[in-house]
Amino acid sequence: MRYRTTIQSESFVFEDLRQVMACASPARSGDSLAGIAATTARQRVAARYVLADTPLEQFLTEALVPYEDDNITRLIIDSHDAGAFAPVSALTVGAFRDWLLSEHASPARLAALAPGLTPEMVAAASKLMRNQDLIAVARKCEVVTRFRDTIGLAGRLAVRLQPNHPADDLRGIAASTLDGLLMGAGDAVIGVNPASDSLPALGDMLRMLDEMIQRFDIPTQSCVLAHVTQTLRLIAGGAPVDLVFQSIGGTEKNNLSLGVTIDVLDDARAAALALNRGSIGTNVMYFETGQGSALSADAHFGVDQQTCEARAYALARRYQPLLVNTVVGFIGPEYLYDGKQIIRAALEDHFCGKLLGLPMGCDVCYTNHAEADQDDMDTLLVLLGAAGVNFVMGVPGADDVMLNYQSTSFHDALFVRETLNLGRAPEFEAWLQRMRISDAAGRLLPPASNPLRGGMAALTALSS
Image 1: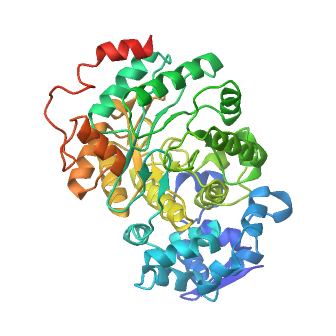
Image 2: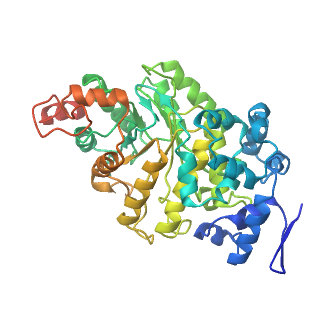
Image 3: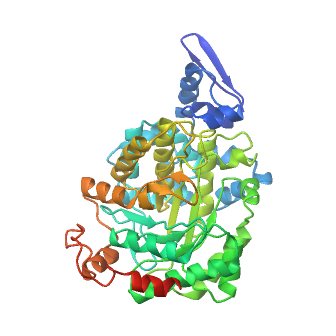
């Protein structure tokens, strides 16, 4: 179906809704690399005019990736909740954008609406929004999850403690973990990206982290971010797995390039639930995504990278995950060229994920060959904090020595919490007070005697 509009006597024709979406997107290097971006600012504006007048229901009848060719499209259409969609079913994308920004879009109504929205609908709305609009709507969406603590409550910001080591050295991982805990980080998860795929090494990391959590009674969860198939093997071998991790994408072909299928994810969630390791909840999955992954796998089908990213969230929400985060700047400048594009993409991803009912976090990050720096990340961190992001990363010194990219540090989390008056997960905050790491207001206490400080003896025992 062709879409047409005229602006100041200049006519524009778009071959289908997929082209309208791509041309309406804010400029970014990935869409230009794919050859689907608007070629002029006027064409971008024309696409947005067309998109604003497009009924939301059109996305239920005109699939951007064919239904018969893609299991993510089938998941989106087959799981759509028409009853939840009913309150906005008569709206165009432009009217939906206005409704989202109105007082009628309360947190309760947004939560009830989430099952009725498709990724394409929320991606379309985001393309008509300024950054402040994305923040204003996302902060109204409260998505709460639980395993050993409660993540996503309003006025709180959790941190994934990321103690990566280039050689998977247990002492190095334990030292970074201790550093993060003493800085008040780790309530989202203590999550290690392994350098190797060795099952014995992965099992050793899981057992060391589990012993630390159990010994000090820390209300948090651990995760070794191995491929889901390796995690299934670890579970079968009796390893103490809290969360199952997997990177996912927005098309079936994209996920196959990552070595994952819906059936495998179904099996992994069932296996993790059977372990019954959560103390206050059963959200056992952790997903990571990122704009550009479908393009890098030649699996985007001409769909713009931001919409492909939103489609990955449809797969994520099937599993009621504890955590989902967009690793926004990690894939590189070929897809998000500079700080401005990274900031915009992160706000889009957070907005889309939250509207779809996901517990969205963000790895506020960039690679060293991108046109970005730590000032851009400071800006994005504050914007996401204002938008109500569920969690961010805590990396020693903000410099990941294993993955070789720049992220946010334990100190950055302290800064944004203090600046925006954000607390930690309540159970974790109470633990910090019991351990005399922080006071009742959440501020770190001066160095003093507590069961973790001076913890090299415990560290040696745990990692030996």
